[in-house]
Image 1 (cartoon, rainbow, N blue to C red):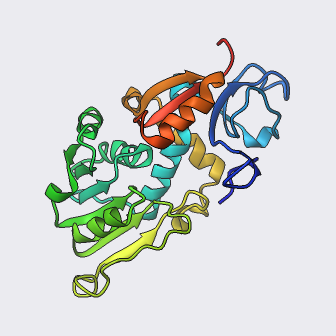
Image 2 (image 1 turned 45 degrees about the horizontal axis):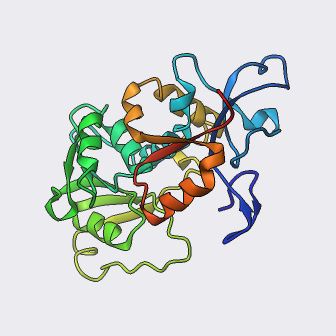
Image 3 (image 1 turned 45 degrees about the vertical axis):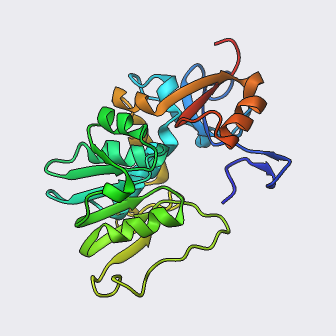
Length: 266
């Protein structure tokens, strides 16, 4: 689970980061001057192979393109468990990934979508995305499909509880080395429920013959033409302020979804 181009190991020191958008200064003629997306740790300038870059399409602001990794993860989850017209769906966890899943599901016809989170402020995010919202204890059950992205044991348990018979829960969370305990001896078998993992590192088997990772990332960037995703950008800071900003995010003093880091004067 190392990030691309990571140096060092946790808990530190480590050079780590993930979503990066910039302009090519040197390289192949067809890329020079283009705005590109890449997966690279936080720093002001870097050199990577050309095939590690994805050109940001016209019509997608660079400021929004930083969400490409989260949208790609959401897209892959929908490939892993494709929704069907008329499905009743819950997304448990309204962070960046869960909100991106909800944003894509909002485009499906005839689908009931509810975004579920313990933070009441995420109701405003759900409204902007065009989906319903509920706290976990009031979430609507009898779901055909639940996408779980809260990275908590309680969230995954609640996801299983929300399923109708024969329903499927898709877990997008990363727990690290934390053990997770689930009630698999209660209603899990009697309802014939399914639980499957989804991880962006591999394309869904049904799609591998037709789509590469580059194709999938290109689709994610194209989906970001929709300005609705701007609701997920909740802050921005200069690169020089990153140590303080990271500390505030880690302690919860600076809540939000995607907090952009701005490199250089532009």
